[in-house]
Length: 201
Image (cartoon, rainbow, N blue to C red):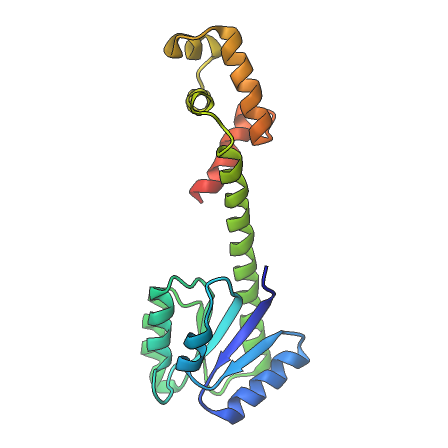
């Protein structure tokens, strides 16, 4: 898994240098980019971390970059750096899913606080995705019959009812139930239901 990184995208070299210095003194791993185009040319879907993005730049704007990231399915939290006149645009970006915006001039600690929250949000998303993958991998080990039994277990039906509905013996239902719990690594129907909510969150 890639380490988390804060990507600074700004066409002003002095601002890039200042932000790099700020983040590194606070122990935040970062990398800077002189344009949206240069960032997008190297962007990869498995990157972790967050993006600090200037809303106004020469060439592709921050908003255009954000739209392109959304189109590519990026889930990296984006913090916009805005001037006073850009606040309405930043608010519009929030409605599209941007993480936050910060208005110039800003206090260093305010930006670092925002970045740390964004990094924590991305980390939690990664953990949730990993949990979903684990549950999906366990589900993939179930046979078709075990899946049928599992659905009826989740509906709260007793073994006898499941046996009648599937035209199998009680002993067979019990064997299936035992294998389902073993494969899904749970001890009860309640735990099974709780585990499967991971896929719906």
